[in-house]
Image 1 (tube, rainbow, N blue to C red):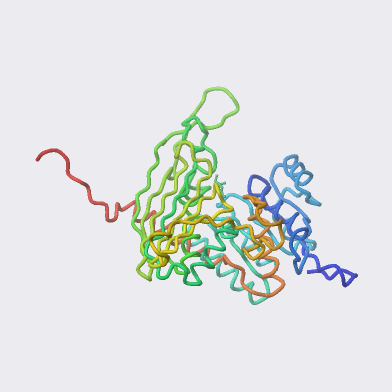
Image 2: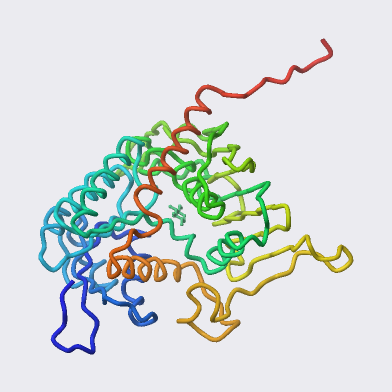
Length: 394
Ligand code: SOE
């Protein structure tokens, strides 16, 4: 951090971002806005953005407000005006970039899932542990924890409003792969993405389950499926070739939590009509909570201790100043959106850096999610607990 001459202005922190696609744009919004909305202890400055395509990364720098554009992430992490590296690349480069940045003395924010394997995630945790001793912090970008309604749901559960949990039920449904003509992009190849819907969407709902329950899944049993096994390879014209999809289109899995609660998860990019539909319902001995990302300013809450004649799910509009993050935004009823979660993510990371505390979700939290994903894949590959059902009259 660099202390400004004037005592009035907060110290600044140079941010360097690697990647400039969807997450690069979303994270840029968070870095640009955070100090205009929240009283943060340190003001981020968008120092540099890195990407391999010189014209594309220059255009991204101009569009998103980055002071410099470079074509090699190694140059970015070596810059003296960068104190935090934000990794917004496909999963196959998370470990290399994040570990190099930590070893170069930078704080790190890394997009989810943390890595493409448990081994890579383990190495990232080890690097973060070593860097912690040097006062550096590392966070993984599970941004949905920072939807105010989700953060408030965690407060209600931690405060005992549901009592002991019995069921956690999560679905994360998208439909951008329903069309078989969608090309074989990096998200459809194991070597670049690690897994398909499981790591892309399943990682979010595994993290949310563990965050909301306050405990880690103890075990899972799973089914995965790749419905469209070949897809066109985007080529520069001529004979259209196809390539094999090497990741899941969908993952369904159940799990147990140490407290005895049961959890169910469904992650798919084949749910026609569902654009970015993340929903959960959590049932406890004293009540239930339900959330739908398509109505992300609302939380449904049922208090089972109320008389049955007047009980039922009530809709809480999560826009009060006393709700998480809302003190800095608009008056009650003026709704927030998806993009605000990235501003909240930046706010919490900046506070962790200033306070010298470990941010949540940490790389260790990211490793735990990776372990669940690996267990799901192992269960699905072994058809664990899958019992064929006989048919016919025999
Ligand atoms: C997948 O399309 C995706 O972009 C995920 O990678 C993000 O994590 C999710 O927030 C939105 O959907």
